Image (cartoon, rainbow, N blue to C red; front, side):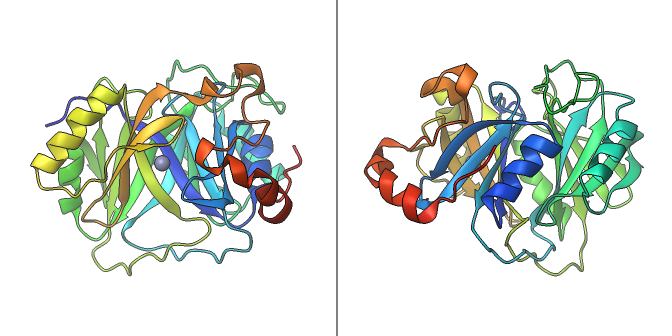
Length: 309
Ligand code: ZN
């Protein structure tokens, strides 16, 4: 069993438009855009990162906005809901606020005794807020005070056909915590706050079809490159197909596809989002990795729609 993983690092999803995506995460949810770059594997598409002040691992929601992309079809084999932690007593504020911003499918409910508020993202993405005790510092802005502001991720839900896929979570160091209905909760002891995974088991569900609003992958956090090498070796030794270590400029990444269908990444907490711009101006300028810098003029003129903040 691995001991290097701390919880979630980031969640990456697909969107149909950069402007609506930016507005939702910065203006409606009050997160900070901590990086404006491109998909390193398809540089004509943005890669937008939203999180707390510094984009602390465990707080970072990221998007590839493909202009006009068709919506995904929810189903089995995907991350169905991404849940952010908010302070106790703040859900009434959020229910009002989300309604004011015309957010769809706002629905309060409880799970494992926790108060939650489900809502849809701009492309039908599944999101929830959950009230928890959480000492992580929030990013404040857009009229959202520290009493209400998002602390980072709490958890992600995976919707799967069978619970066998929990094996990789146990291998990664998660512990089975509780079951309620179709949902089994896994928790990372001593984790980073973004340290819960809920698996919803739906044996008869049709396979999900990826599109706008779908989660592309779930990234788990390790402290540094040495820990990542240990994780990669352990995964390979156990028979997983794992990519080589890939430099993503703000972290190093390895990827592997789980049997349930969800793509996992293990990402380092180093070097972080302030490696190429100062912390006061994170996310403002278009940052390109060195291999794509020569494309800047073409990308800005032809492919990347300007984003109004
Ligand atoms: Zn990633």
